[in-house]
Each structure stands twice: as C-alpha cells, then as structure tokens.
Image (tube, rainbow, N blue to C red; front, side, top):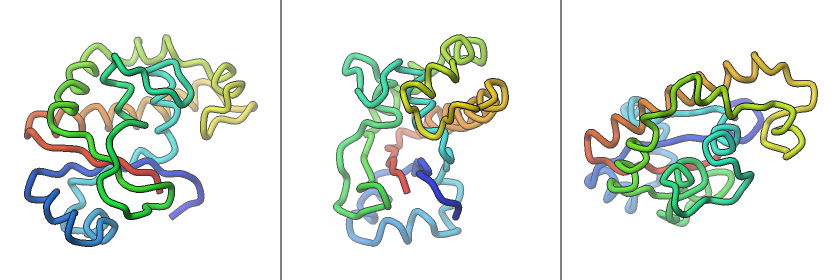
Length: 164
C-alpha cells in the first residue's frame, strides 16, 4: 500500500456489524470475500469533505454530508492507522444518499478551487497542483463514493469509515 492517508468505507448489514464487533475489523475489511463491500477513496477524502461542506475539519451539524467523511460514532476500539472505524447507521446513510442527489459534476466543479484548498491545507493538495488533473482525480472518487452510499442506502445498510 502506498504512503499517505487512505479513506475507506465498508458496507455492513446488521449481521456483519455483529461479526465486526466480535472479530478483527481489519481482517474482515480486507478479506477478498468482502471485496465488494469495501470502497477505497484513496487520498481524495479530505477534498471531498471540503468541497461538499466548505469546512476544513468541522462537521456542519445540520448537513448530512458533513458526516460523510469525518462523521460517525466510534464503532470499536481498533486502530485502523488513523483512529478507529466510525459507524454511520442506516438512517444517516439514507439521509446522505438523498443529500448527494443534486451533486453532479457541475456542482462539484463549482465548489472546487485548488488554490483555496492549498491555502487551507486540504490533504493531499500541494501549491503546484494542476487544477484539472486534481479535479478529475477527486471527481472520480466522489462518483464512486456517491454510488456506494446510494447502494448502501437502498440495502438499508450501515457504513463504517476509516482512514488508514
């Protein structure tokens, strides 16, 4: 695995959550049998949070999308690299899926400003970042994440998020 802080999401129904409470989360998350339940958004997680919320680390309480990257309740006390996995329950997942609906490429692009993000030290942006390359990178992971959240919401599942 490359260096850096990688954001990941794991889709879990009630049975899987019960299993994760008893067993080693990392083993389950990275088990090939669970590949389709795991989404890695690489280093784009902080950019996604900033574009959606306009905050660096704060979580706007009245916006479901504030929860998407930095939210959730600590699920179990297992360090995934940068803290424990955090749980977003089915109701939160459903609210996030709804809140993601209007976010198309144009909306995402309108709020995407590399210079501003570099000034605010949004990970992993550097001063010399090419705007379009960086946008396409972030957008590709945002698209995957949106689809993943929608799918979890349709199944009534929870999401676990962690940074490793």
